[in-house]
Image (cartoon, rainbow, N blue to C red; front, side, top):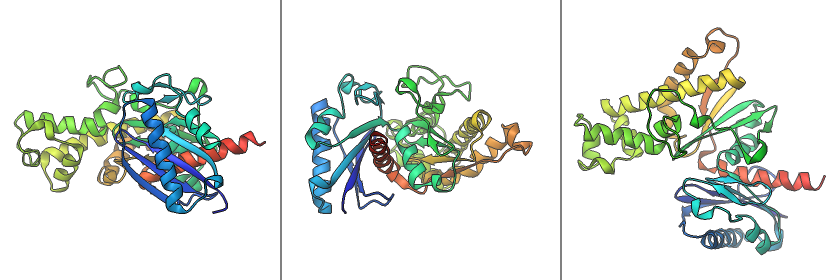
Length: 326
């Protein structure tokens, strides 16, 4: 490559690194677990991962043009300072971008892990054929992104769309944001696991009991999906409930901004295939714009797998450099 851009995508437990040139094709991609202790520790892991990526692709350091970083936290887009994140409080007040920029001498940008995958989807995914769509980032949480007229929506004060903290039921489970009853806490990976734990602890006859070794605290979202795949009635009912909640949320999104498509990205995008018919059915039943035939919308799973974040980070720094050079 004549030059390259590097994307870093932090999740709750894994960090991903990707390299691309000007086109949305990754020349390198890897992921592994990381540790959350101090800001210095995060910086060292970023630099170590970047150096390894450059080494494995044979890219000279002077070919690196920019670095984009996705994090599960609110970030000051100008300074890279972390404002708040439920798993990143240890970084509050520290700049994620400054030490990396000083180390490599290139532009470094960072943003929240809902906006960044939206950049990726717009560049490399559904955005290639659709100019008005919404993104639901579904995994350990439920985030959101918007693309209107081909442009990723980023709001003042470093804010962003947050559909995941809407209420679509009477449940009042406490959410990590500090409110109660958010759809995020009901349908995210931890929420699905909690539904399963409650079923096992409540004595319901379910395959989940076998999968967790009769210990409710060991139930995971993956176990719920596995049990549902084996036609377990309790697990199927849990995922049916999740699909209804997501469908109601998507109906609200259509009523608000009339997207052509709603794309699910993130860790649960792949296993969500069995839920898509119920999500779409519930969305249509709860949105008069749809059942009156005034507009159309479909909820689909992203084709980017878990690469939307690194692709989006790369695209965002490309756009940042382009804007700076105008």
